[in-house]
Image (cartoon, rainbow, N blue to C red; front, side):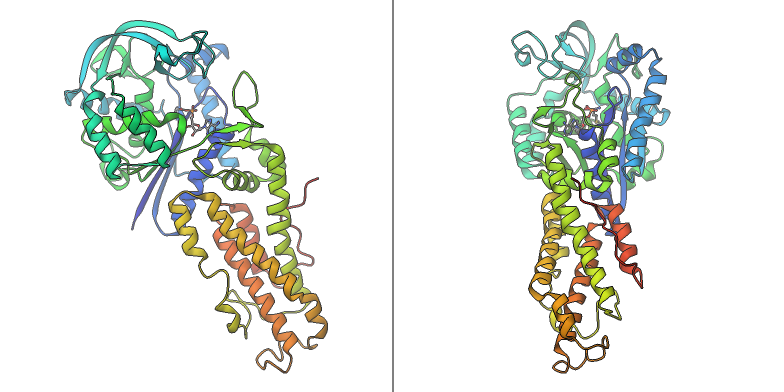
Amino acid sequence: MNKFYITTPIYYVNAQPHIGSAYTTIAADVLARYYRAQNYDVHFLTGTAEHGTKMATAAKAAGQTPQEFVDTNSRLFKTAWDKLGIKYDDFIRTTETRHESAVKKFFLKLQKSGKVYEDEYQGLYCVGHEAFIKESELDDQGNCPDHARPPEKIKEKNWFFKLSDYADLLKTKITSGEFQIEPPSRRHEVLSFIEQGLEDISISRPHVEWAIPLPWDTSQTIYVWLDELFNYCSAIGYGSDQEKFNTYWPADLHLIGKDIIKFHCVIWPALLEAIGEPWPKKIFAHGFFTVDGQKISKSLGNAIDPLDIANEYGIDTLRYFMLRDIPFGSDGDFSHARLKARYNADLANGLGNLVSRTLNMIEQYSISPLTKGGLRGVKELDSQHPIDNLQSKIDTHIQNLAFDKALAAIWNIISQADELIEETKPWELVKSAGKTPGVNAKTPGVDEARVKLEQVLSQLYQSLVAINEHLAPFLPDTHAKLTDLLAARPIKKPVNPLFARKK
Ligand code: ME8
């Protein structure tokens, strides 16, 4: 059985889940559901990052111990993902023993690699990023441009990792495609970063208490970013469950946002190389959301709670809008007006309307028998059926993570079905059709209107079956409801709209 190991970033718990973290996690959920349906052994990992100064400071501000704080806030993520119908296989927290003990083993191995040395670090550290920052990256006021705060000036003893040794190997594996970075714009960004010259990186800190102690020098703790990256291995049993680790590692896909590509595309593979483990196969960095044209920031207070959207419109609308409106990989705006417009046009008028129209006509016009394969006597229409190539189109789009195109292919079937209704006007056919349903279906020419009516409704029904099947990974709730509707005989009259229009 083929396996598919997919991960999201593990999110900092000093912020609540917002549409950004929901975006990556929903996209991963769609892929996990798709590959499960293709009979892959899927392992979908998400989780929370809980160490570091940022967390300790936020805990203090909340009047809690760091452990209390991270326990409460990590739960918020779990609850949010559960409410959004995300079916992860594992949720890792960096404060769990299974993670901490694996990280210590990883560091001991790293030390043995001969790529670690002690030195003095002098420079600037941005707590918001939990990363060192260069003077040249600051704005005119000397602040970190992303966090609008000055970085800390640091002069301290650190342990270092010889990242500079890996520049050539990284370039070779990235350009040959052995290590895939998508989309191409991000690959070029990583290559030009490497081209500018890689510096060694600090892997430990002396004054950060809320972190994992460095196994060979307890005056230091492990730099949180390295602790976090290792979650992808600790969660699948690195150093404790070799069989599970061998089953899933290397990861097939790390899904991340564009903000953290250097960590994932440069530092992470170099660390893995140093400890003798294979690199992840592919990293895909998606774009960033703005909200109504503005960057999401704590100071603007414009973070959107995905659960608010789900409560107002339903989980599937949130999933649909995020993946349909913005090509995955590009930046995009999360605008309420666009969300409502998409909802009304594509879900209420498009899919919802087609479902109720078709099923109500089948019931009203007494079209039967109806099976999953469609009605009898309709073979001649099958050859031109628009659903013929849908599966292969969707497979290609999913492989490219072009969720918008996969959804557009499904919605194309909806448009074609709508056109078929407008062209053939079943409500007129039924007026001239024979009174006894199905009697003349096998003898065209005797009752052409009824044959045509059965053909049309059969084709519409088959379209709904195909649409429903392909919707499953994207809109799981809608898929469950539609599956019930398609199976029900006799159907309730009238079929309630799947999506009520919003004013
Ligand atoms: O960076 N639009 O955690 P984090 C789209 N702990 N996606 C967004 C977004 C936006 N506006 N804002 C955030 C960390 N994201 C580390 C990760 S992994 C080993 C450690 C998403 O809570 C996107 O996936 O800051 C981004 O990469 C991630 O949240 C950053 O999450």
